Amino acid sequence: MAKDQPYTCSDYRQEMILLSLRKRLHQKGLPESEKAAILSKIDQLENEMRMK
Image (cartoon, rainbow, N blue to C red; front, side, top):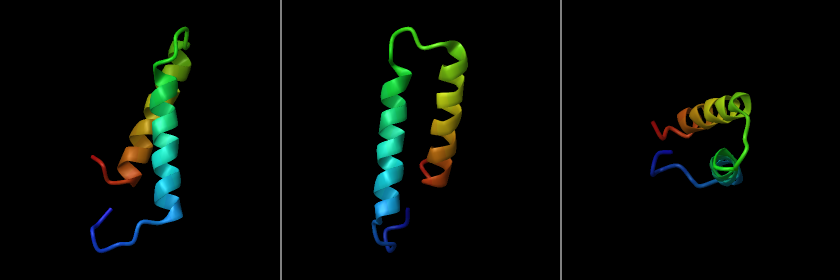
């Protein structure tokens, strides 16, 4: 997000989703298929948020 753009509810929502996905990623007993799906969603969100 550029500095001249306001921080919106949508930005906050994306951050909270990203945090919850990262937390889920570290759960014990998480199947590899679910882990791959979470990593994919994290990558997608980071790209949308221009974190990469």
